[in-house]
Image 1 (cartoon, helix red, strand yellow):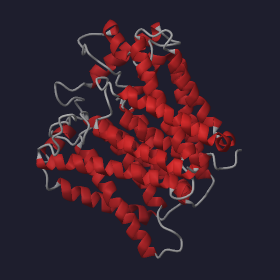
Image 2 (spheres, one colour; image 1 turned 135 degrees about the vertical axis):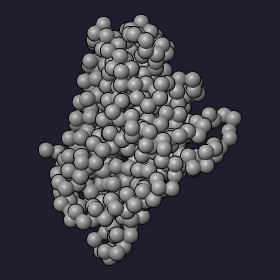
Image 3 (spheres, rainbow, N blue to C red; image 1 turned 60 degrees about the horizontal axis):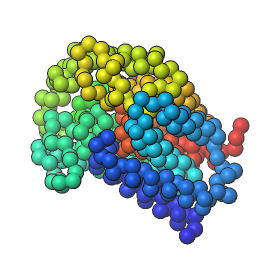
Image 4 (cartoon, rainbow, N blue to C red; image 1 turned 60 degrees about the vertical axis):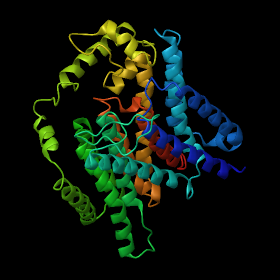
Length: 429
């Protein structure tokens, strides 16, 4: 088996894993078949390194790889002082295996076509498939699949796809839409007729519009806010990279807005209007966690960090430790801090959070370096959209826990691998 064939095998595995985790809403603690799949993933990663070690050795991008390895290593060290070593071991294995997605995308998939480009379009297609399913359930008001082994959410007044939590669906949509923006700006060749280039961009703009509609109808205020902040971030990088005629940007935006408005005018708008009316009251339903509840959770997380500043309570032990730090009348059984950064700090301590933040800083630095190269290839033009997708999910993580779900974390690490994989092809400064 050649390296290219092995790379395509890894690519197929990534897409299957992404689709399966999407279809199981990310895999919660009760899905105890996950350790088996994680161990298989570790074996695949070991085989990959052994097969390609001579080719990989001079290609590592230490700017991004070392902080990520430090983050994973500190998560493993938290096992020594964990309050629940069984949970920590389970979560460390899962985190390490999902992080392997980053290394596989960065180093296993070839840079030349199809390679990483297939993965980019595959991720975009998975986001579209999730949206189509969610919209069909929303319109029909009944579940489309009846599988005894697969628990899918019932029809709701919002779109959640195959996710139980509509906020996690919104997080996936934010990444997929921004990735779509990058693909729109990067398609087309110079030798193509202008009409053909426009047609390709319109073909990609329509799925983006469908996913934007899904994001709006998800009624996730965190998803709305993070996506709205990602738009100017994308436009700033887009302008820096290409200096395009704004008429093209406006034309694509008009196609998307038109598709969304036509659909919204033909559906029941009452849930959307009710959700918009809650923006000044900061709550929607009594059973939904409010801003006040989140603030209380964050205070509890800071208390955990104050008592365990260096090693944390052990990665993955938040739900075991939370009852001892519970404040007021907040929920008794809470699995997550509803803030990804506080979740990392509480579980791993300040060094773990520092390694993760350093990884993010270096990842964006490498993405900016790709854009600054002033290249006109596919990846230089697509990079603003990829970075905007990462930016959107990281903003959303301030009030939610999207990256605690394998489905969204695989998507995140796949985008990160695309950034680092392109950056390591550039000459170092």
